[in-house]
Image (cartoon, rainbow, N blue to C red; front, side):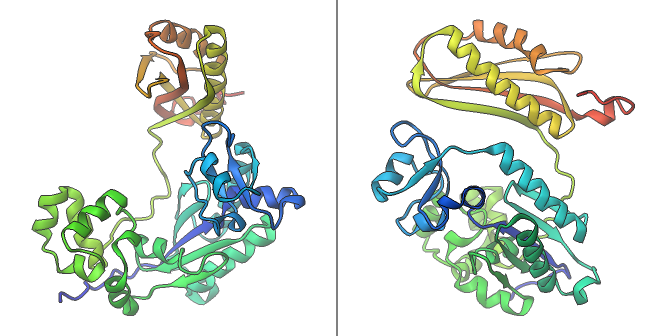
Length: 361
C-alpha cells in the first residue's frame, strides 16, 4: 500500500454551525426550543426543507427534503418561514469573531468557514485550543452552538467537523490520517457525491483504502480531472489554500410559487421582489454589476433566461426594472410559470470603480 505523502505543516480549522437556521429560530423564539422544527416552505405546496432541528432529524428529516415528506415522517413538525436577513446578520457576527483570531478566513456559506491558523502563537499555538476558543466565543456572543474540525488540510478538517456534531471538536493529526482515510467510506469524502459514489462502488471501491489502491490513470479515465482529485485525497493530499478573498461571479435571488402564475402583473411584482433582494445583496457585498439576467421556469420544469449588459453599472434596484420589463416581454409565454429569478453578474468591487464615493448612499 502506498504511504501517505508527508503533509504540509498547515493547521486548518473548519467551523460548522449546528442546524444553523433552525437554531437561530429556537434561540429567538423560546416556545420552539426542544420541538421538531423545520425552516422551509409550505408543506402543502412545493416547499423544501432549508434546515431541520436536531429534534426532527431523528425522524429522518433532512435539508433539501420536500416539506410534504417531512410532515409525513413527523406529523408534529413545526414549520417556520426562513428569515434570511437575520441569518445573514448572525453570520456576520460569527465572521467577526473569526477575524479576531486570523484574517485567513474563507466562508463557504452562511454557516461554515475555513480558517488557516498556521504559525499563530495564541492559545499556545494549538489549533485545537483555537477551535475551542472560537466555539466558546460564538456561544457567548450569539447563543448558538458550533462544531469544529482540525487537521492539516481542508478536506480532513471539513470531515472532522462532522465527527462530534453537535457542539463538539474533532482532530485528525498527520499521524492518524493514514488509518482514518483507509477506513473512511467513500460517501464521507468531501467532493464525492451520491452519483460518483455509486460509480465508485460499481468499480469495487467502497472506502479510502480501496480508492488509494486504484491507479490514478484509471480514475482519470473514468472521471476526467476529478479522478486525479479523488486519487490525491485518498493519499491525504489537499493543497488548496484558505482563500480569504472570495471572488463573486454572480449574485441573485429566485422564488418558486406555490401555485403556477399566469398573470403578467403578478409575475412582474414577483420579479421586482427578487430584483430588490438581489440588489440588496450586491449592496451588502459592496459590489456593482453590469449584467442582469432574468430566469423563468415553466410548469413543465423547462426554463429560459434573458440577459442584458450595460456600459455603466446598475445604480439602484429601480433602475433595473426597465430592463427586466424588456427581458420579460421577450420571454415566450408557453405555459404557466412556476419560478422567477433575477441574477446580477459582470461584477466588480464598488470601491475599485468609485473609490471616493459610496455608490449605494
